[in-house]
Figure 1 (spheres, helix red, strand yellow):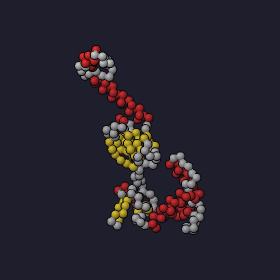
Figure 2: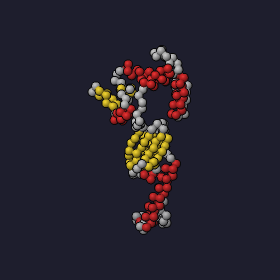
Figure 3: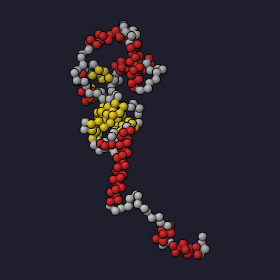
Figure 4: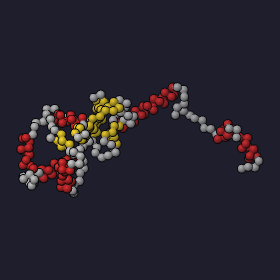
Length: 242
């Protein structure tokens, strides 16, 4: 049994019944478990979930610093070993005393693991970046304009094009950042230079002046003469107008 407090990624209550998302249904079906979503405005059911969060916030988080999500999980795992050995009045024993019995009562995991993480498909734009959770990750520019598949989990962000990996980044949990692989940046620079060389060569072959051709430097008086201002300026000077 899996219990959630009205997460939109899991499902919602509609017309008196629960509507799980397609991904939740696939996950639940693979594991063979039941999903319970707390009803709206049900403080008693929500309290079961919120009390666990509140306990971690008051007992685990104060005074700690973390360098990365992995460091957070490592410290939490070490702390839970100690915390679960403490007796609980509601249980009449320590949580660690219940682990063996609970594990024996659980069903075995299925032979095929459920699909987890994020998957999406899109066509790679000219900036050769894909967006995931407000962050932009670079992709090799050789596949610009082609359809790519983004596969992400809690640790990595990978991009595939026709089954071939064209990007592999560490997942970044900060927001609004651009993560660039130096190899992708160098490849993009090379492609831009090749494109400019091709345009320059094409322009030269067509007989039009390119950016390297010599351009005549005109005198300002030539523009005055072209607009018929030479006689007017000469007459003004001879008449004593400076």
